[in-house]
Image 1 (cartoon, rainbow, N blue to C red):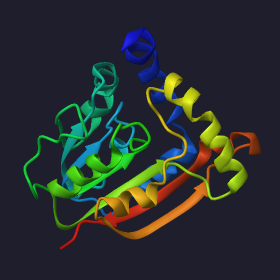
Image 2 (tube, one colour; image 1 turned 135 degrees about the horizontal axis):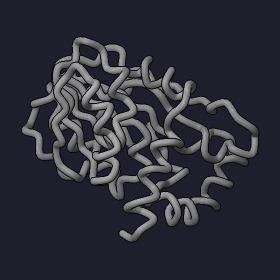
Image 3 (cartoon, helix red, strand yellow; image 1 turned 180 degrees about the vertical axis):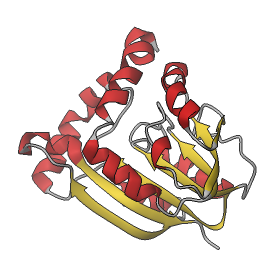
Length: 208
């Protein structure tokens, strides 16, 4: 793993994935979550302040021990139960149909086999349960998409395996999840940042 990925990258992600614009999107995304929620890529707990009162338990999948330690303050302030539930989104420890909903924020870009992870999410969701996603991925503009593909090898090396060019809607559909509402847009910022800032927000449902 190395010093960079184990000690520096979790701190960088904690800062890069925070801020007013993303907080607003996280709050909107969390609406409708309830009961027992699986969160893959829990990170430093940036989504915790936005969970609605209807959520009583978060099953947090997070491979980084440092990110888990960075989440301690947010976990202590939360009014719900947070359980660290495994280290690998591709091999969830939760039982079949044991979660009411699931959440993934900026996670599918990094998981080595995202379809396998989404199949696992589908497995642990109750029939009809929703996965709420906030992810960056392939842009619809051909020029931006070409730059994403060019930058992917460097991005993977410096950002812990992160891909810029993953097709999030296609991944959801490949796992048999039914897309309900998925919107793509660029985050605010200069045009030069567009290979990194095209994102998708919305929900997909496990078959009933």
